[in-house]
Image 1 (cartoon, rainbow, N blue to C red):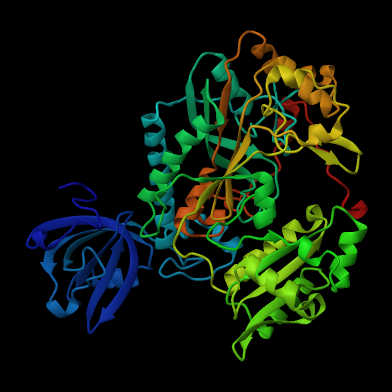
Image 2 (cartoon, rainbow, N blue to C red):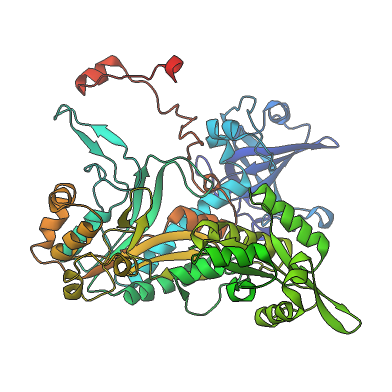
Length: 604
């Protein structure tokens, strides 16, 4: 018989009754019922109930042992009586009657319990993560993560991709976040950087003649923590493909995502339809966000003309004075009560706004009438036209946001989210995907009074390259209207990734950077390695990199990445379990030719 187990704690069934079995695991729970001692023994796979009588030589030992001690039990598999069968447990029809016991490891008093789902502080949970990971819910989520990554790999291989590894020690890159720097012992005063993403390497893989690359890639960014962004490190499904259009990327990623979410939906709905493609400016206008949650059916509308020249002087005056001003309507089906409208108005004031204008409709003596100050000011005709335009009925409402959309669209989007949530309008147990496309290539930097890149400087503009080279840059409006082959994939309001058709032509890239105020020398200095590679023959290529952590978070149904990462950092990017970051010995600093300069706390 094996030294530790003939079966796992999830294997034994009624077919095994009468056999001798050996199982090993952690003491999950102990119960003393009328002299009989019951032990729930737990391993990675599940639970098995162990029972022993007071006359057993091991009774006092087990009675003394704390929960989470590790033991090996040998005994006979017996059937439970009908009244004691546990139908919620796969092993619930049997128990093991203990004959022999070996103690592998005794547990001291626990800093947090494993049984149940206690609400312990993040500090305690992360400091003792190895105990926290024993809890059933968290344990299952980490197993789910492993299965999801395995499924992603299989699906990418089935799509004709091959996994290649890119360097972890590389050069510092002037990307959006701060680098983690690694000092070089052999080259004093010089530093490697951990990759923020394998972006340049995966493009160079395409230049090297490999056609379809993917990698479950670790990425490192010195960023502040958020619920949907882990500080320090994260993983992404990094992919790139040669001779590919934007639609080619969509045609690869959609079946991978659809199949993945189908596989792990666990009863939730994944619509069997192509992911809707929404131009960036439409997403902003309809949803107030470039990462809309399409489970919410509310779509906002520009109703400026309804208020132009109307009796509601606040909006009418704004529209007359400033051509950039618009009035957006946020329809609220079933929200037609003064109490709800007042609640939304109070919410807007908490958001730092003066309020949130509204109209709600009711039926009086067989006639539909609009109520509220705005309805009185614009009159019955405009109020009714607005109701018909928005498809609203008695018992419905509409809220308004006004101003320059660049300044208020995010507030309007949040209001849309609150209305949908408060009125229970959103789909339940559904995953809704979309592509956000046609991002502007450039935007106006008001602070510096100049044109700058809006999203991704390395993407191809949506114009024939030779036509782009003929631009002289003097027509600012034409530049700001130029779209790029850039795209985001969004699920349930969570941005999973950005991607792009890459700018693989050095002449076009230098021209594109020039319009944003970067001279050729700066571009050559910062990105010379990739530019030089492109000068020796580069295929058109495109890619994307959906975040693995966020995919798992969605499928696990949690709202914080720390619930799907095995050993996460805290919100200050500290590893409380391993005590990192930490000071190092002076000998190590001397080897690296480094000296630390700690800020003076008194000077702030």
